[in-house]
Image (cartoon, rainbow, N blue to C red; front, side):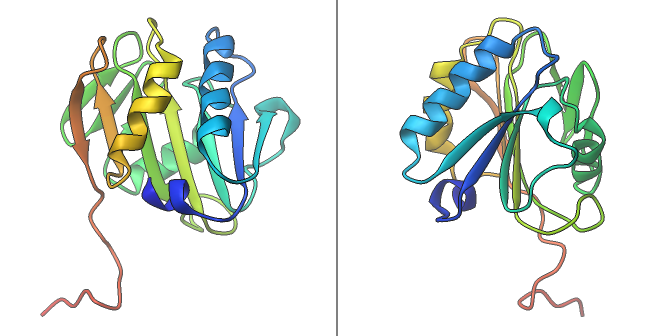
Length: 168
């Protein structure tokens, strides 16, 4: 997530127009706008045909771009469904576990490159508290919380390709 937080390029935040917690996601996006020191564009997913290029923060379990997100999860041996996420053997339920997950975009899943971050709020959303708290976890690829926003899981994705990675 540090790459998204520290990037100079504009950030597009995509709101889930069909999600019952739409207003909570709007609050979350407002906190992002206030805390990031760069241009932030907030747009409803129904106003887009595909995810924009560059840094994108997709909000909501019911995003129009769930297929693109599922592909990114699968590339990291994780999964996203309508009611839960599975990461590293841990199951995070939509009703009780807010999550923030970052990916380096893959051309397999979407055109172009850039960072994609996804956030799913729980049924008892604390959007402002979560948006503020996640800035403490910038060095991680994913963070999961329990109902009271105590950290339940955090980690980084394994590097698949790098000029510094050599298999002998």
